[in-house]
Length: 255
Length: 307
Image 1 (spheres, each protein chain N blue to C red):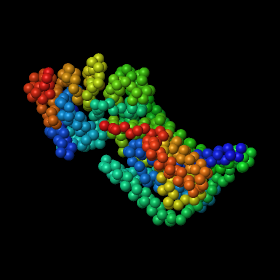
Image 2: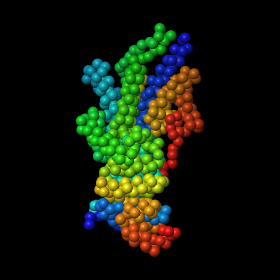
Image 3: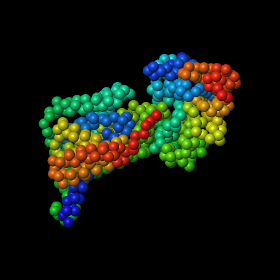
Image 4: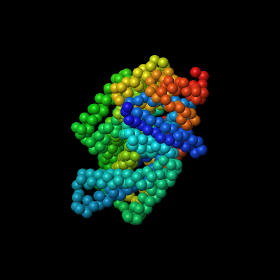
């Protein structure tokens, strides 16, 4: 068994009088695909926001590789290999697709001002390497033809793929996808499922997923955490979750 | 056609002054573009740029340097370096600790910073006018004579050339370099840029430094053009450049350049039509009109609610 990459203990997030997240525990092992499900407003996205430094949790611990990361600035967490997508795609819309991928490699390339000013050989070389990686992922996501178009002008499915590619540019260990299948047609959802599997198998990425598409969740997750009104309701394998009476009552209701 | 030449002359004068407004306006617009704050101390940074040039020129004169090129070079370099340090420190100590809270708080801090810097210069340099010697006297005439032609001073040529080079450098930096790319990403979505591993504090500091250096260029140029500087000149120049930035669409760098040039030309023609003392009236009426009829400015886009 591999060790846990991400360990969340007793996570709480309070906004004034509202306790949006209340005592969530989560353990994700390296190379696992874990999903978080729950009704709208259950606090799933808030958990994501705490994990990647958007919010500073009110209490609780977030350990990445045993190291606490709660309350660190976002770029420090990103440099540790935690990165996410958003429910509403959040690309740099005025920059081209390829620029979106280059900017995400900022932390990995030599950003010395003077190196850039004088275009030193080291700068050129790392810039070329960054460009190579970007081209590779554009190809892989079939976005090569639109590489030089502003990201905001791409079709919705393309934007979704570009956002995932942009995450991969940061060389993540933990990739958090917030409703990646929202707005995709069944074929695109099928492609997404294949892609998530490939990211894990070929790039060693651990995936934490928020998703409403139950077919997708049940077919790719190794473990599922159900959250209801900010609090954990159940945790287990897809088979266990499907059979859990609490979950059926709170969430799967009609199925 | 003396009339035509007269208008051409006003156009040249307006574009000259306007290009320096544009240089200062870029500093306002870049900072606003990234953190949504008006840096009211920016005009003072410009004023300090003039003073550094004055000090450098005076020191060189005392040392007996009298060839033009080294004097120019040292004046620009010293001024840009020192004001960059000012730009960085202002952001680091007066704004960064206040970021993340209410938007009004850094704004008030900026006003305080502006008063502080003005008084600091008054205390160290006294509040009387200082004269910067005319380094580049003389002019030439395009046309047959001064009456039927356009007179352009060498100083105006210098202003055009230097502002053009500065803007060219900036646009290459923004569009081609890695840090420029990071700047654009931050201007579009600061939080997202941060989540992708960009140290946004560094980028914010960088925009303050770039803005300050460009304001210093304007400070040196206008100091030499007018020949007189005092600790109060940052206020009016700052407000004018702010107007230029709003006119062009605050947050947009091409907008700041366009706004600066337009404002300069409007002032020149306004002064010509209504008399010199109405110059500022024309400039600020323009601001009021823009705010009334096109609050986003010429190249600005309506603010989209970010989720």
